[in-house]
Image (cartoon, rainbow, N blue to C red; front, side, top):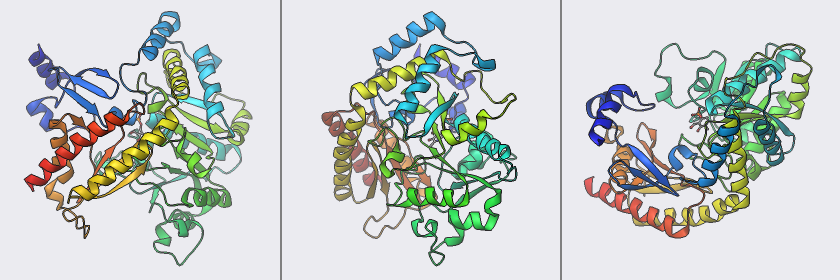
Length: 449
Ligand code: PLP
């Protein structure tokens, strides 16, 4: 029965990124059993709009039969075989070729992982490996941005800046530094600009360029609250990395595979990174897969290494996951989901803008394509923030939940953000329905203030 399920959940399933005390007391907040398109259904039959594509990954929507069929056929033929010791399989080979075809020029090989955190750790290791191979072993430091999220394995988590992810003692990797995001002027070299010393350029100069391996950036910051960089920023960082001989790692784990209205977000700024981490939308969440795309100039140095590159995961190049990834990209291309994300994203952005006018607590909306957010304020005219104890975003989250809309919260410390990222297949009437539920949630939230 449903009650039995909840009891078993409470007892045996320790939930990721959740409140254990709350779970121990009252169990799962929701048990989802079915999904179709933009909708999810819980075990009691209540339907929800998946306003975040689950964890920003279900790009083609739930219940896609073509992906299910592809997984079935691949599992029947060969679900999995090792890719260590030079072993390979057709799905991994074909997906790696497809990724090279759709990625920015020069990113022609991939190292497969099982998700985004592993991809970022792999990028850090390969970057350091490269510098060692070219006789610069002291280049080890990684620079990430404040407000960033790069995952939770020890390397990725050290690059993550969001404070909640640093609650585990002893789990910080050395040689990781953070810089203030989006300071275009500083990155261009204007030493008089505000926060120069805490910019990427300032941190490189303080630490010494001969000690820095790589800069890692989400082209659009996701979990931190959806922050689009100002015009010229990513181009300035690319130039800065060239100037100081430092790798540029683009973390496209959320942004990739159409989410922002281009296949990869770096294309909006015509920037080619040295490494590009992908995961999530690569399979639309239908299988666990990630990868690091590697630029030819890095691959060339790796190719000169005549030993065992002792890095790899059991599931690197997983046959079923790669077959699903390939079919998923085929669907994204065939159904024009990248253009659709752009077009529907503009409509969605306009509808969110209406909420800024309609609701006194909604101060602004940000984003690109179908990756957007709104920010709440106690007084949206003066941008006065809520008290941190008010837990405003959490309260709004609950009102949305009660009205059948699943979203999430970002911010903390008085900053209250609700990110929204529905599946790329969302239609205009479905966006209207999402906005209707969201607006009703905001009205209830404001009535409670
Ligand atoms: N990088 C970014 C930008 C992410 O948003 C995430 C997950 O949300 C990750 C990395 C980590 O990915 P995973 O949870 O698959 O390890």
